[in-house]
Image 1 (cartoon, rainbow, N blue to C red):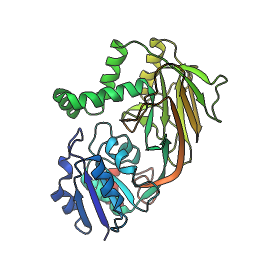
Image 2 (image 1 turned 60 degrees about the horizontal axis):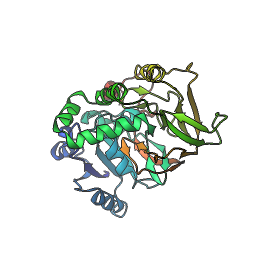
Image 3 (image 1 turned 120 degrees about the horizontal axis):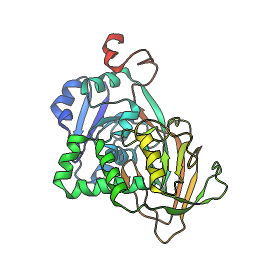
Image 4 (image 1 turned 180 degrees about the vertical axis):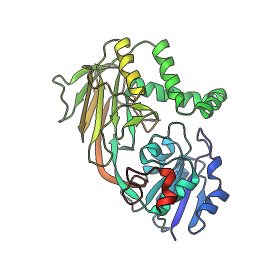
Length: 326
C-alpha cells in the first residue's frame, strides 16, 4: 500500500472530469489516497513542502504542463515520485512519459512501478522540465495564457481543439505581427557559433523532443543524460522561418536548413543586446523578464512514473496490451 497525495488544478483547460475523487479512490482503493485542491500557488507550495514529513510516497498532479511545473519546483531532489494526470492543453510532459488521460491505463502504469529519474533545467534559479525559450514561441505561449484568462470564448475553444490552439495562435502571430528578431549574446562552451552575437526570431531550450504537442524541435534529445538541447533559428526573413517551422509541425526535422543551429550542452547564458529585456517561457509558463538568462542542469533530479521502462513494455507491445502481458 502506498501513500498518495493527489493535487487537482480546477483551472486546467481540458477540465478534470476524469479525475474526480470518487473515481480516483475506486481505481486506487488499495492505497491511502488523499485529494487536495489548493486555492493558490502559495497554498500549493506550502502543502508540497509538508509531504515528506507526512510520509507521502507519490504526488499525483492533475492539470497541464503549468501545473506540472508548479508541482515539480518543490519535488526536485526529494524522495517522492511524481505521476502526471494530464488535463491541460498540450500536455507535453505527459506525452513524453507516455501517459494519457485514461485512468485505467494510469492505474496500470502505477501498478507496474516503472519510474525513471529525469533532469531538471535551471533558468535563473527556476526549474523547467520540458521545453522553453525566447522569441516567437514565447509570444505564442504568452498570447495563449493571456487569452485563456481574459476570454471565455477562447477558453471554450481550447477545450474543443486542445493542442491545436498553439498552431492556430502561431499562424495568427505569423500573419498579423511584424517579423521580429532579438539581438542576443549567446555563450555556451558547446556552441558551434563562431560569433556569439546573433539575431534570432526564436531560441529554444529543450529537454524533450516535442513542444506544443506536435512541434518536433529536438528529435534526438534525452531528458536523463545530463544535457539539454539548444535550437537557434537564424532565419533573416519570415518566409524561410515559416518554411522551417512548418516542417517541424509536420514531424519532419529540417536537418539540412543552414539557418538552424542545434547542439547539446549543460550550460547556456543569454544576454539581451537591444533595449528590451528577455522574456522566457518554460513548461508553458512565462518567467520574469530579465536582461540575462543563466541556464544549467541538475541531472536526474526528479523521479517520475512512466510506462516506457523495459519492465513494463518492449517495442513489440502497445500500451493497450498491458493487461495481456501483466
